[in-house]
Structures are given as structure tokens and as C-alpha cells.
Image (cartoon, helix red, strand yellow):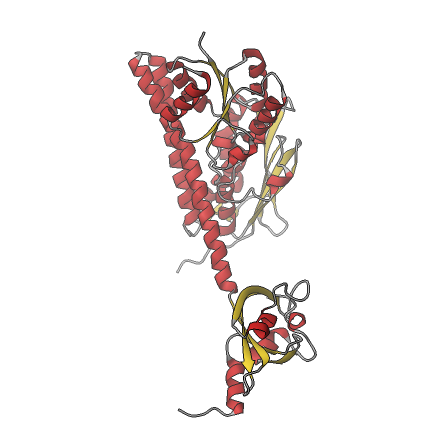
Amino acid sequence: MQDLTTGQSEKILDSLPCYVTLLDRHLEVLWTNDVSRHDFGDPSGKTCFELYRIRGGKCPECLVEKSFQDGRVHNKEMTLTTVEGTRIDVLVYSSPVRSAEGEIVSVVETAVNITSVKEIQKQLILLGQTVAGMAHSIKNIMMGLDGGIYVVKKGLEAKNQDEVREGWEMVLLNFDKISHIVKDILYCSKEREPDLQVIDPNTVAREVYDLFKDLAASYSIELKLELDPELESAVIDPSGLHSVLSNLVSNAMDACKLDMAKDEHLVEIRSKKGKDGGAIFEVADNGIGIDKNVKGHVFEDFFTSKGDKGTGLGLMVTQKILREHGGSITFRSRPGRGTTFVATFPKKDLPRTT
Amino acid sequence: MPKKILVVDDEPHVVKYLTTFFQDCGYETCSAGDGEEAMEVLRRENPDLVTLDLQMPNETGTRFYRNMTKDKHFKNIPVIVISGIPGRHLAVSKPLAVFEKPIDRDALLAVIKQAIGA
């Protein structure tokens, strides 16, 4: 084994894939490696918290000071900001550097970039929340099934046909809910290519209108259709568009049903030709509107403000379909006044078949 | 005279389930589909116990509970929280018991019997 020359040691330190910083007792930077200089610039005359742009100045529990004090290695997770303004999550180790006499003369800090690990951690937390949300939805359905089975049993015992029928309906409805939720979950979890076709988007909008017209009338909600005749064709997955509009109309009707303040309720499906040639759909209602503290959550999975009635997946599915098309969905809402969802499908060419 | 239970839940099927069950156990029942209606039924029917779903739209369940416990006529009526979301009962300060959906019928009945008798 060969001994390293000073030049070689420095080269090795420079190319280590982490930020290496040598610090004195006053937290002034004595030296940094190339990787650090590349992301954080020239360290001359700076303290470590200045160089790494730690928010709020010196860290509350300074690792370097600790290492100077007890001569041990310490570590913690921190967030640094590069010269370009990118925030980087790092795991920092501080370790004392001793002179030949054994006195601690400086402390070397090595910071390993763990941003991607943090990202995975976030996704895992999200996944956990999704599973928990799913469990709650299913528990509610179980309650419904439980109830249905109980009412059927009591009806049979009492030979009461009406009771049996009522219980059976409860069973069927909840069975239906399970089918829906499973379908939605599968849709959300699968990466799929939309089945792009040249379609007349107004035809799909009309289909959805026909599908909901009678149901809306039964809740005395007026369903209106306002189609832009200039929107003649678009490249969209027709079943995806159908799901998007059905979800939005169904939500809009729920918003009207929950609103006790107004006598007349209206849900309007509108289509428009976008400036860039894309297709824009709006579903507007004059229902209860979306509360400020709910606004940030509406696209989250299993988020529902409808108690037992929603699966909490409708808008998530809607958003996923739009994303698959390279489009977007936004909304504006005023509590007590109503909500308008806007789904934008960009202009697209049919993918070339090979 | 049989004791009376008020069932508050926005899901008609849950109402049907619980009222059927309570009637089988010898109780009288009344019900409400949201917090506002629950307040009316409470005044009209004067129940001995309330089961309350807190997972209702517009948080009317929580508001109902608050209004109910502020009223000196009703504040001592025992409340059993029935919810699909654990931890949600924290919105209610002193529930008699908390049941998660799907409920354990026998355990629920035991709590009710202890509170208001058979």
C-alpha cells in the first residue's frame, strides 16, 4: 500500500461525493472541497451557516461546537440552500481533527445529500395515508353491509317483506360502493396510456348531460348544457372525458344538494375551444361552494367532505385523467355561492402508430 | 315506559340499521339526518340518549354537540359517538363511549343498558 502525498489526499477529498468542510472554533470555514465549492461557491471569509445559507443564522444545536467540546462525532439532518437557490436535504457528520499532540485544532464536516431519500420518505408517508383512508372508506361500507344483513335477518324472522326488501337494498348499495371504490383504486394505482382518438368532444358532453338530466331533475336541480359549436374535434380518450365530466357533474349536484340557502339550483356543463386549439370543459354549480380550509385538499386521495357518501377518490381520478392527457384541472369557488371546475385538454396529435 | 334513543346520522341506511336494532332491544327511537334537524328532534322528542355520527357534511355533528351541551335541559343526556374516523371524537369533549364503524352491536347495547337501563 502506498502513502498518499498531500496533493493526492486533497484530490480525493475534492472528488468525494459529499460536501466536505473544515472549520475552526469560531465556525469560520478554513477549507471546502470541490463539490461544495461547485454548489455553494467560494467559502473565503464565511462561516459555515453563511456558506450553506442556513435559515436563521447559526444552528441551534451546533455540531461543530459539540465536537470541539467533547471530541466526538455528531450528526444531524439539515436543509442547505445552494447558490442557485435549490434546497438540499443533507445528513451532516462533524468530526474533530487533532494535532500531533492530540489537541483538537479543527472540525471536519461531511454532508451527504439525502434529498432523494427524503422524497421517498414523503411518498411512503403519502402511501400510508392512502391505505389508512382506504381502510376508513371500507369500514363505512362494512357498517352498511352489517346493517343490511341485520335488517334482512330481522325482516325474515318477522316475515316482513318490506323490511327484507329495505335491508336487501342496503346490502346491494354497499356492494355497489365496494365495486366503485375498487375500480377507482385500480384506476389510481395503474399507469396507463389514454386511448387517444379523434372525437367530437361535444358529443361526450351531451352523453353525460343525458345521463344526469333526470337524476338532477329528481333533486330539482336544473342541468344545463352550453356547447361551443367551434369545438369540432379533439384528440382525447373518450371514456376518460366521460369519467371527468361525470365526476364533476356528480360533485356539482352534491354541492347543490347540500346547499339549503338557495331555492333554485343550477349545474351547467360548458365546452369551449381553447386559444391554442385545445378543448376546455367547465362544470359550474351554484351550490354550497368550497370552504377555505378544504380548498387545499380537494385533489388528495380519500379526502371527502361528504361524510359516508363519497369514496374520496373522484377528483383524484379526474386529475389523473387530465394529467395523462397533459392537461390540467383547476377550480374557483366562493363559499355559499358556488363552484366552477375547469378541465383543460391541450391540443394534441394522434400518437404515431409504429 | 321504554327509554328513547335519538340516532343522528346522515346515512339513511345507518339510521335504519341502528333504529331497527334499538327497537329490537326494546327502546323507542327517533332520528335525524343532520345536526340542525337533530336539534329540532331533540327539543320535540326529549330522548334519554343520543348516538351521533361526527362524520357528516359541514361538520354539523360537532356543532350539534356543542349546542346541545350548552343547553341546560340537554347537557346531561349521554352521547355515544359513532364514527368511521378514529380520533374524530376529540371534537366532542365528554362522550359516554366511542364506537368505530362497523360497530360491535353487543358492546354498544351493553354501554346503553348501563347508561339508561334496558
